[in-house]
Image (tube, rainbow, N blue to C red; front, side, top):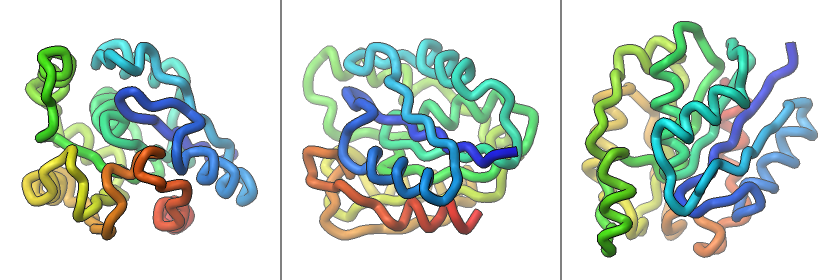
Length: 188
């Protein structure tokens, strides 16, 4: 069975943003089948809508199925994995979070609240793989680093990597390549 990678963009994200096209090209050159779906209503992401959309795209998953998430895409993957009862290959979370610090407008708070407050059953998520990697940046203005780092370590026993000066790893931060993500997917 061919190895498949699903790259899930973040809030207000899109498939051609930042480092996603570069990662897709690199993985395809290594024989992976790569999907970067345009998630529904990216400006107003909803848990149920995003998780069911991802489930429909993935179909049957197995140990040749891998996920890469950015920001709220990480939340989407976690909540999708919670519904699985089988093993997958591994997950790389980029700028993943459980706690946000930059929600300024009322609309942002309304959209973000369910993602922050709806519990995740980590015991179900953990049984899907032993390969959880989380990549943070030391200057991310969106997520409080220490609190999120601690939660990913405690809840998923994730391997934590801290990059320097990558912001929120968005296209607007100038991040167009992330070789570390490629290397982790290849190492799983």
